[in-house]
Length: 394
Image (tube, rainbow, N blue to C red; front, side, top):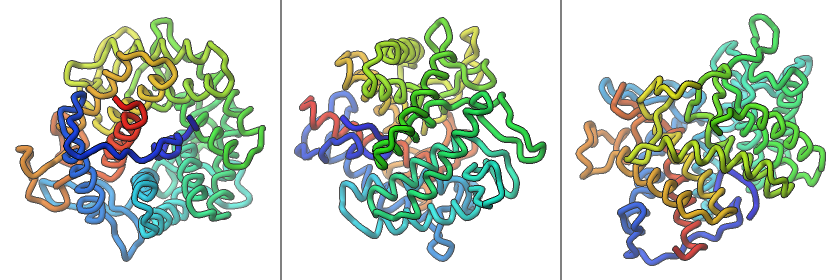
């Protein structure tokens, strides 16, 4: 299987052709019903959040006050869903929307001034938020995804540019962020080595240039030093586990094992997967934050993280064939079905077209918001499972 994070077709999986009436035991739903949920989100909910005049997706939508936030960082992730959908539907109009959203994001959040030593860095907010490696790596993945599907040379140039920011981060003790106000690299924060590994591997595949894989390996080596004795990764200030920085780390370790056949990467991946499975709730989700002493700090679920972890477990299952990994991935995605707002699901605000077929940002309900990045992870999770099961004939 190929490496990649945006689409099951990036893994080399064909689009599944299972009959619509096949019942997916792990999800408790038929294939046709799952397609209905995918199509409702992609073709009804997502367009209602795109501002065509601006060329970008709105931020969070608050159902209580019916407020659409102005476009913001959601445009880094929401285009991924369009790229994945284009792989399935071969609809060039989806690529055009993805390109417009990516352009809007680049022009506002990516440092592009030629005199900057942190060129390619990606801001967490406007106008002068800190630059984070996790966002820069995600932009590399988005730009590479556009280049793969359109051949756009500018997209590849932008990917190389943000990869350069990751190289500078590694030179500064793999610092996760650059403080724009102080003009200094900071070693505390959200340490997402997994996204950097994925970004460099994607560039290695697209360009055929070996040095990108060497950078990926360096970040992977660094990641191994961060694994705790219990197998977990406490990547916020070296103290807290958070579901937002779990899936990419697990997936990156698997990718590096596949590329190098070095057992230590697979061992680390399985140890982390075992840690995750031991802490998976009965409903399939994970609490948002856990500290090094095993205390659940934030029991709320950030639902967009759950399907992302499920996809990483699928990739590890492809290597190990461990049935418990597949079971955990399906249980996680079964949970995801419950946080999608469907016409007959009993959810509040389901009569609002900006809500229907979307996914709640928090569980339990906190602010009654939905957003494009949450939906992107959920729907792509369903796509990955469908195509993976189709190949495995499970």
